[in-house]
Length: 140
Length: 153
Image 1 (cartoon, rainbow over the protein chains, first blue to last red):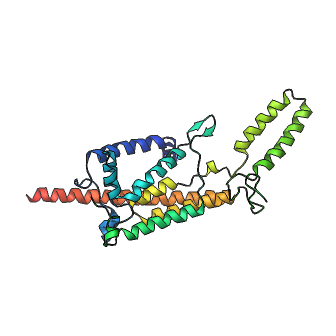
Image 2 (image 1 turned 180 degrees about the vertical axis):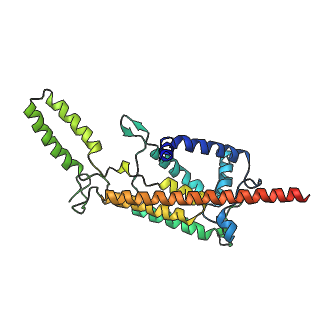
Image 3 (image 1 turned 120 degrees about the vertical axis):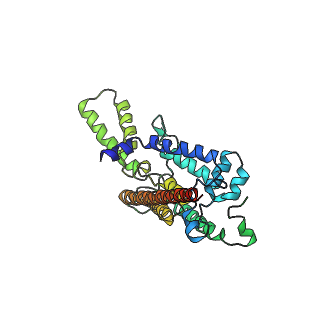
């Protein structure tokens, strides 16, 4: 129980302590050339791309300022980044004068339906080896 | 019941408007508490009645509604991150539960939302842990392979 309490109390610190070294490693080593990063387990087991394949390589390219290379590797993840930044800021519950700076958004059902449809379509389409779709698979 | 904000029609027992998301119970509770506050102050001959009254009302707005959206996390970021980085279908289940949290909040089902919120969290943690386990297994296999090739030479 004590461990759980401590975990809750220092949640933010633990997350920062985990994310910063990971970001530095990701900045220094390119996942497409070095072998220190584990492969996607889905790709490893089935040979097919998953919706997240290429996101480590894309983040590495983003850290070096290559937006286009990042979009080629995993466009879905890169396009999700603004949404995720807002959601993370919103979960931090930063308050100014008692009001949340980034209020919690209650999304509509159609938002979720569209979002899930995009993920599943992206998952299927990027595995089709025919010209318009091969650009969805990680490539450089 | 019609929403005082946008005029959209809602079921009578809902606490939030399904069109604009504004609270439907807010006004009612405020009026009620305002009344009791007024009588209390009158009985006690409380000075500065107006000021106290307003203060009470403002505090009340933030705390009285149990369905205040702010209190039920939907773990959407966590589930997206887990879906993208751990590559597991469990992350998609987590997103589905996040969607239930928001859906239930919209219809005013606060406890149902809390329940779905817990489920979303559980799925996120399960897929995070399995992602980490797969990563550790990979690292062990990789270092064993390295060791093997070094020993062979």
